[in-house]
Length: 366
Image (tube, rainbow, N blue to C red; front, side):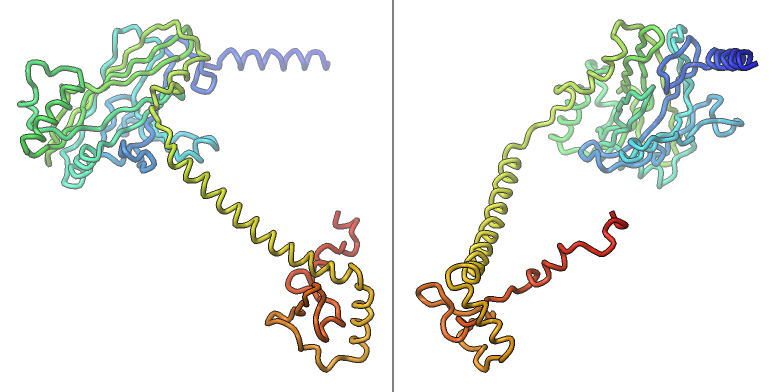
């Protein structure tokens, strides 16, 4: 009977494994499987720590089955986050785009159109373009980034014969217009191309580009049409090295601030020296006080202290400093009546016995 149950359990488990499809947790897909495109955040390029949710900007929902007007649409659905994603401040939401793994149709173009922009929505896009906001997306845990828009002069004038997909031409047009002292106008990118490279059944690389020719001026009462061109490409890059491009030094270009490091190092040395000096002075005074009690003549001091405890002393406050400590003579011995009594501890040293004394019922507490 047990053998039959075990065989049925194995068959059930095998059938469950057989129906499991690829997803972003196993990172394995079959041709035609859905690959989710998640949007994360937007914020200033100069200050990545200032981040907002992607749909803080009035982006629209694509005209797919995930559109909010359709039932069971996944648009703007919040992804279940891991502890690391929560600590990192990620807020991944579904973009509403449909990506089918290894789609060989030569590219899928998905579009959406916003409602007519209000004053508030126009101001949001204008702020994003003026502060150089960027957005972040994820495909199979691989991040991609793109710029929201640009501050440009009249786009018709900027579109010269050499204007194309090279962003450097935009920078040249802006620089020329800035030298002439003209005003700049906010534009947003309306067409993006997402190229997903795969090796066998795994996603290996994701690239996102924005088409400069799709820049549209942001105006009140204007409806913007956004396009996403999804393309799939084969690659021989192994799956285990797909994050190497993100760890490349040329990708980050972070400069080491040697002066700040040296300044912090010297500050630490100064503070350590200051603390060591205070400890040495305190310990040296304590060592001198304890040497009086336990060195030569220490027994006479203990006897004098016992005598004072029984008979009292009328001049115990004489020959002491403002802290109540006995004054020392040239030989290092307490002078005057203070020499007939032992040196008492002060401060926390009076309770050191209570601090380090074992409590009652120690085995129970241990």
